[in-house]
Amino acid sequence: MDKGRLIARINWPGAAVLVFVGLAWEAAVRSGLLEYEYLPAPSAIALGLSELAGEGILAPDITHTLISVVIGWTAATVLGISLGFLLGLSATARRYSLASIEVLRPMPGVAFAPVGLLLFGFSLKTEMVVTILPVLWPVLVNTMAGVIGVHQRLYDVGRTFRLGRRDTILRIILPAAMPLIIVGARIGLGLALILAVVAEMVGNPEGLGYGIVREQQALRPDLMFAYIVTVGFIGIVLNAGMLALAEALFPSFRQLQGGR
Amino acid sequence: MGSAEERSDPGEKAVSPAFECRLVTVEFLHKFSRKRIIEDVSFLVRSGEFVTIVGPSGSGKTTLLRAMGGLTPPASGSVLVHGRELNGPPDDVVIVFQDYSNALLQWRTVAANVAFGIERTLDRKEIEQRVRDTLALVGLEKNAEDYPWQLSGGMQQRVQIARALALRPAVMLMDEPFAALDAMTKASMQDELLRVRDRTGTSFVFITHDIEEAVYLGDRIVVLKGSPGRIEQILDIALPAPRDQLSTRQLPKFLEYRYAVHQAIGREHG
Image 1 (cartoon, rainbow over the protein chains, first blue to last red):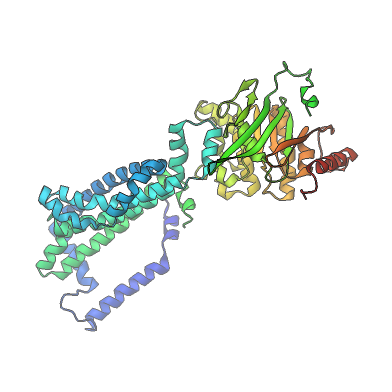
Image 2 (image 1 turned 60 degrees about the vertical axis):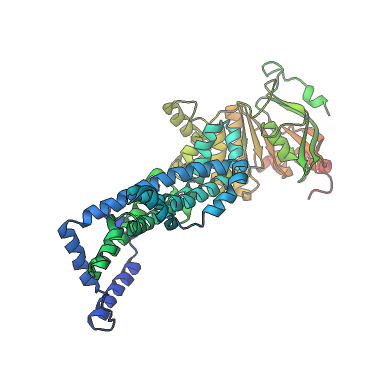
């Protein structure tokens, strides 16, 4: 993408509101309007960020969290798309498993953290226990809905062009369901980051999540907020990367979504 | 009813027609009872012939077309393509559906939609060549890289027709393909279709509820009527070729055919 289009795509009024809120926060803290002992001004958070980066502990923390997000999300997405296809294509499979899914789905993934700790101790595996299950659901449910929602006419088209089962799945069902699969994968990616951070706060003492807890206990709210801001920033980058990937793999994604 | 079909065409190779329905009956299961949709439908389509099927709604036109395309198996009777009884969608027969926006692959460009039926069997150069030729045939060569949703309804339907033509089918089965188009687009599409027939020798079976359209396009008209639908009448249309939107439609014979079809369908149709 060239610079002109990038500039055109930035939401300037939205960015202006963000800057304004930041400035108002800064002004409120400096003027004493907001007086909490542990609420730092944005400038203090920025300084905290550079302190963390300077000490060389931010980069490894980011790496750790990213790795656990990527592993957890990839595993959940592959599993979710496969199961979603199975359930979408087979009414029998749906009849037998939807009840179990509706029971399992509302269970908060964090609730499995103690289970993970018992099984795997303080480790990446514990993070996976917390991450994979909650990320699985939106991918699975959206994939299933996408597959079920493929218009009957497209099956007719597949038949009149004499497609076999494999080609019907690869050339018709998969691309037709793709917009919803991508929606599921995007929701899943957001969840994966949240859950990885939570897992690091309660389970595996590493990465950005543990950084937040550590700095809170060290009574360094500026550093704690610096970690929080970093998590938010990673969320934005992951979402943008996901969209770019979707558009690269599936050029008409944006239009089929009806979005900008 | 039968005499018109049995007449042999000395110009055609052999006697075997492109397509034949023999006493086709289709039934649907509906809550443990069978509902008969069409009954004992027999007619044949010669190679290069344009057969139109008219009938009031509910007379089973679409069901008949789906049976001919191998999408719905008949309960009794048989459909033959080049003398062979079909069993599932046949090799060189392809259906063009009425609802083009559902039938097109919205995630593919126009060119990729047209390539859909041939991309598994031809090599890349042949595919490109045939896509280009077919798009030129329907006048969409400038829209190859567009997506279907960027096109008007008439253009989208032309994409679907091109996708079917790219296969070079012996028979095209069309289910009210112009029903959703405005009058002007419809007229130009009708002429386009006749031109395609003249150039490619493809046979057409064309469903419509528009009697004038049936007369204008058809070499023969099959009138379906009743529930279950049966053949009410088969009319040979002897209008001069090439047909012309203005002069053909003013011929006394055109009006006679139109009247005859109206009579055959009866008062229940508007």
